[in-house]
Image (cartoon, rainbow, N blue to C red; front, top):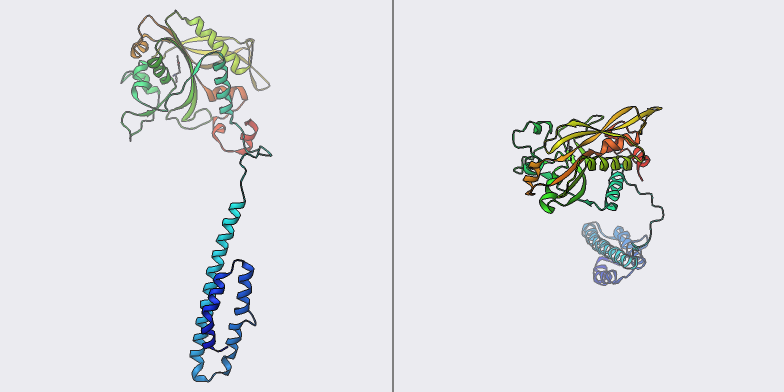
Length: 345
Ligand code: DAH
């Protein structure tokens, strides 16, 4: 065919390309026109028969026809691809109810395991398990806990203040939840709270700027005394370490929100480098802080006196490390999969 004939046919071919409904049809058309012995390819071969003067124009006309056909084929191909993708999506349904065959995607971190264990233990005993915000303010973190501004005890809490939000800080302990709870529930409280706390400490083997605390608070209008506190702590330690016979002692200490305040130790001994909690131990291990709720704290929470209460607070990471023989707190926050797998559940 000469260029004129080709041009006359072009519209017809383009329409045919447009009409195709499969890749196979399109390929066939492509091969008929542009393949080795396709119409357009053959037309290019006749260029040698054209006179020198006409060669340039002849070539230009053929090239124009060829590229129109190529463009059309390419556009059609994209259209067919899109269509086949949509068809595929329509026919492929994803059954998200199908159970996972091999549930090996991960496990519960040792801290999560401990939190859940403690929570379940206290829930089963009728305690409320309560949360408070991690971003606190002066009132809940300090003032209401009998630590007014410039109180020296504030210095021992290396606090992270949030510059962007006025009067806001990352809570340095979970004792703030005591205040929130008493303001809410008055003098009838049996609660624990487990959560993250923050202090501006450098990270080393025994310190982390973020760690968890477990806080316990019991308040009543009926007299509550240190005996109740000691009994509750015995239960907690014995439950946490899974040891029936334990021995604990109180050491006088100072916490502004308690009167009296004390530190709690429990007996242990070492066997082949491992720490064993036991009433037959020969050493004392510090577990946490405790005390009877200070009258000023009741006042800050609008609780009429006489009212009675005890509270204790322990660092969770430390207890986990003691129980599991983990030497470095940083391991708890590492992403070493071998470690996570070993302690995960
Ligand atoms: N909030 C104290 C701390 O972070 C620990 C503590 C001591 C909590 C005595 C208490 C308590 O509930 O009665 O160091």
